[in-house]
Length: 482
Image (cartoon, rainbow, N blue to C red; front, side, top):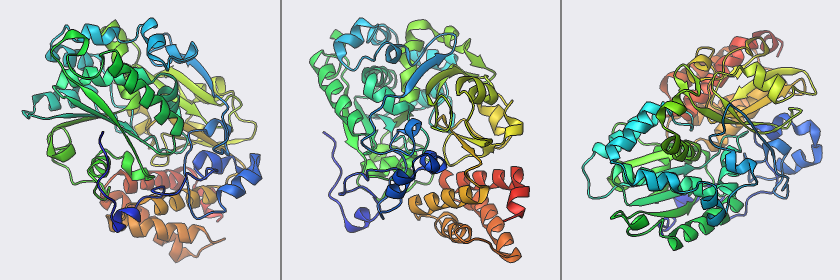
């Protein structure tokens, strides 16, 4: 079992949840914009110095750890790729998973060549669902082509974007889909070791994954001579200690190596020099979960779903301000308006904007709701698909309060590696904590945002800058009154 190296003081100070239990109330974005729905829960969330910025229960925000209500789950696509088993009550156990086509894709994959598998993933058009949208086949091919006596496959299960809970549901109700995909990926890139890096805030997912890994070993799906083939692959589970930046893949690698989990300079990329300097394939849980369906149904069937360069389906999670909060599977190309008004049922209050893909992305204002939900199309308006969490906010949240909350989050979660993010987030948090600021200070915060956009080391600083720039662009009139 992979374990972290012994903690050192500078590591202990980095993590928020290293020794302490997870705080019982969430103060993330989805809970912040819904604070008026349950003022006592919000007061509890903000009463302590320890913070948790997402419990994966944004459909019931403001959320607490004792909230165990299952979210609404629906498919709004021509065919379910990801939620078929979840809709049918889930398949957490291996026997139920096998009865529902589980591990058939692995059997098929092991009869093919790695080159053919990678070609299938490439031709499907699958892109990473973790935020950057990198073509998945390109990643797999890069690792396959590296010559090394050791390679790794890592599932990034550090779903830390406030407003997202799609991977929590998959891990709790369909964990074998991840394991099956990781074994297929290991075969395709010639790796023998897999690691799932799971955030500490998902304790039930940890239980389900441990059971799934043990059951897969018992059935001969993990270990030596998998399904009678001369192929060995095993999966280990590593639990994070509370850090948003560990969702960035190079910071995740440092965390697994027992180092301070700051983002690394790239190149080299993980495909060339990843975990312990070895070629490493990293995809997030939802990306992996597409793989078995693609292997079983073919690249053409998958690429016919979606639109333009955004192929397939996407899981989206809607926060508690929607009349129909929950987890939905949609095809790329559906408009944001359709998501908000038809799938989500609109808001009880007056919609002021929608934040898609977490805090490191732009706002979609009401007049741009007809934008297609797709990678390039959202990028054109300064927004992003991101992780897929969709947080709507209404008249109960001013744009000034929203900016303050976002930069409070950024200041708390910044790794501190680069000056623009470390200093800039704290300065903007301080300015927006006040009731007003003067003309010079107004110019100052805008200049800080520009500096963060141009010079931040990783997506933490540039993403916060994207959010601020969209606020300036689309809410200039309200900001002028601050």
